[in-house]
Image 1 (tube, rainbow, N blue to C red):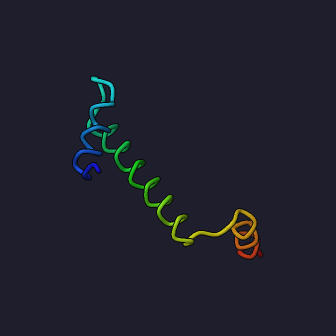
Image 2 (cartoon, rainbow, N blue to C red):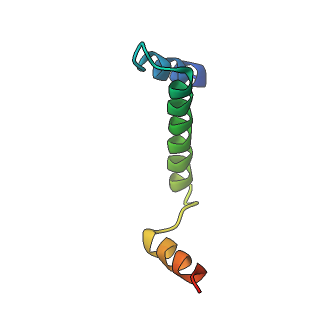
Length: 61
């Protein structure tokens, strides 16, 4: 099992050599958001697209 440091190192090493700091940070943040979303879905802390559509429509006057 890899550690968080191993995962981040792998992600950084996969970036092009000419990547800026901002691009690398953006990629790391994206990865963290995807992992959090997958974890939430696994733990049943998400809603369906249909439910989200109903909620968004309820915000409109």
